[in-house]
Picture 1 (cartoon, rainbow over the protein chains, first blue to last red):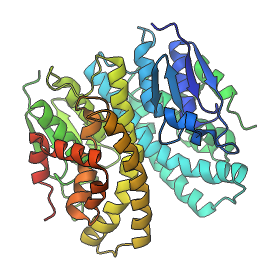
Picture 2: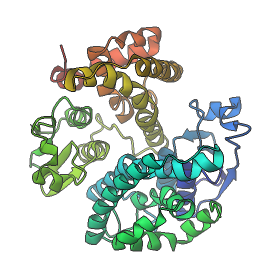
Picture 3: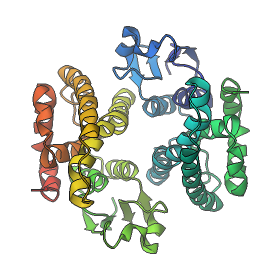
Picture 4: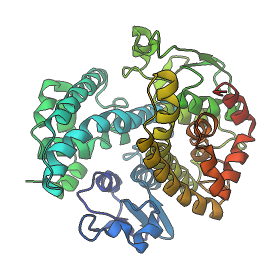
Length: 221
Length: 221
């Protein structure tokens, strides 16, 4: 284990920064969050940050000489590096468990997040950060898409306590920030109420110390 | 190693099916491709297939009793299961190499594919499969986006022979299908000519037996 404290670059409120911070908290690693102003100073486009990530996005991780970008890649590096028997969120020692972690991690990226992100964008980011009005037709379509996704999640979570099986994993963790913002910052948090297994799973996740700690820095209220 | 032949469900021409097939070829695994008609019969929405993937998408993998969906998850399962010293495309034994494989695999998903897919959609899928005209304004914007991505790839491939380092990996492999279709099925294959390192990397990839075999079933000419 490396004794150098890792630096994570990016604002605490970013969905992808939160993804990395949750992993660091889950494994109990030491780290420092280096805040970046994305909207006024656009620090993500500075030469210093472009040297970390040529695409000019957050987060980036500096761990000794190693510099990484892309949140899911950083997160997996952290989870592998600090893996313990208690905190084994990738389950790479078991090919079938690892595969189910990967399946539901991909589902988050390509189905769940794609459905929820337009609700977040229209009801939260556009009005508060960009002064743009909410396009309700876009929201309505996204809500219908979200319901279809939540139906499938309800069925999955009726078979297993967590998405990849009966163990908490990286797949569950990845759902944190978009679900948090839908509940905390939009009028659509009540969507979960119609899916009791999903609702119970979300409450279970939010009771974890890591989720409590990271969400405390993200609240919009 | 399992002696049951795996079944991959989906059409050979699908980008995400090709991602899985390339992995099976790279590791030399036995498999059978079970063709599915996505456009006329919409077999991906049949009860049989929804039991494999509740989201009704291809590919799916059946390996004995294990059923998986989401192409990147299936691909990693295959690469782990059949890993050899010669065919170790995830490099999970080395945390830093594994991290670089993950970084450039994520870059493919979130940057490279996002830039190229609109060129493919407008110049190939919409006209040939859907009878829709090409929206040239969308294409022009996607071409500009692609050039910016290719500039970053040119810099990366000037430092290392492959994306994750000086070894061929899952990160490179993931670039196959969208690059193949841009070159084979659109007027924009010549974009690569302005980026000599990218062009040499692509020619290197296409010289691999696996790439030759899988691309032979995908050509649009």
